Image 1 (cartoon, rainbow, N blue to C red):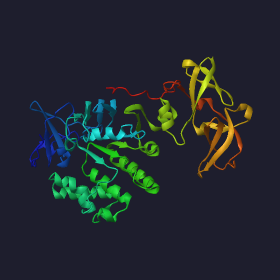
Image 2: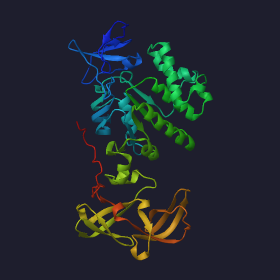
Image 3: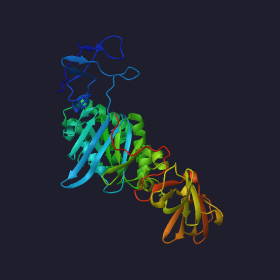
Image 4: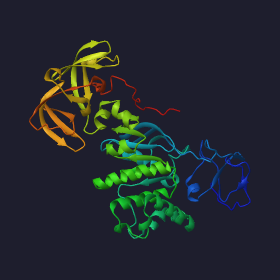
Length: 443
C-alpha cells in the first residue's frame, strides 16, 4: 500500500546530500516482488522520494553514479505465451528491455506484434509466462496498476474537451491535485510545442497535433514505460516524417523506456535502439537496426528489413574451396565465403542487397538481363532487371544514371556483401557476428 503524508519535519538520508534534508512528499511502499520499488500511485502523487519497508526496516533508495536517487524502469518477458482457445498466437517469447531503451516490434500483419504490446499493457490476458515492469511482477495486474502509458493509432481523444483537459483527464480521475495537473500539462505542452493549442478542442487540430496531444496525455502520467501502437499510420507521408522526428527528439529528452509497434521499417530503423522482428507469433531476431540489416539471422529477416528488399535466389553448389562455396548463378559462377558452413543437399539461398550489385562486363556477371523498370528517386536510382524465368533482380544504380527501360545490363556482386542461407530452413549459414535468435532471456 502507498501512503502520502505531510513530512515537513521528516527527513531521510539522501544519497546526494551529506546531511538529512526535509522532504515534502514521501511514498512508503511494501514491495510485492524483487525490485518492486515503484507503483502507479507513486507517480500519480508526485512523490519526491520512495522509502521501501522490508521486514520493518527502511531500505535506502538506490542511486546512480552521480548520487542522484533513481528508480529503474525496465520490462522483462519470460516465456510469454498467448492462446485464443486452441490457436497459439504468441509463442514462448523471452525478452529483456533495458531502462531508457527504445525497442521497436516489427513484422507483417498477423505476426502478433500488437497482441504482444497489448499483453504488456494488460489489455490482453497472458496465457502463460511471466511479465515484470520495473522489477515488479505485473502479469496478474489490471492495466491501471501497471504504470504504463499507451498511445493508440486512433488518438482516442475526447472531442468535447480541450487539449489541456484531454492531457490532464487521466490524472484528474486519479484525484491528483489540480495544481499538480496544471504543472504537468504545462511541462508536457512545452516539450511537444502544444502551448498555443491548450484551449482548442481536438476537432480544431491537425492529425499531427492530435497525435502530439495523445503523446502528451501519456507523458503527464510519468509512467515506467511508453507503449506505442502504430501511432503514425493514420498520418500522411509528410506528417509521418515530422512526427517520427518529434518522437525521436522526445525520447532523447526524457529517455523513457519505450516499446513501439510498427509495420514501417523506416520508422523501425530510424527510431529503435533495438528491433525485434516477429513472424508467426515468434521472434526471428533481435538486434540493433544496422546489425539486422547487415547480418540477418534468417531469410525472413533479410527480406523484411531493407527497402528495396534483398535479392534472393536459390543456387546449386558446384564446389567447396576452403571456407568458400562456388555457386552456380544465372550468368556464371560466384565464389562466396561460407564461414566453413556446409550446404545441405547441395543447394543454398544466395542473398545480396541492391547496393551490393554493380554493372560489369557480361563475362564477369552474376546476373544479366533487360531493365524492366527504372525508378529515379532523386537521391537514388533503382533498376529492376528481368533475368528470365519470371525472376527480377533489383540494382541500385548511380543516381544520375542515364539507363533506360529495355536496355541490357550485366551486374556482379561483391562476395563480402553476399549472404548465404539454408535453402530449406532459411537460417543463415555464414556467421558474421549477428545477434543470435532470442530464445531465452539472459540474467
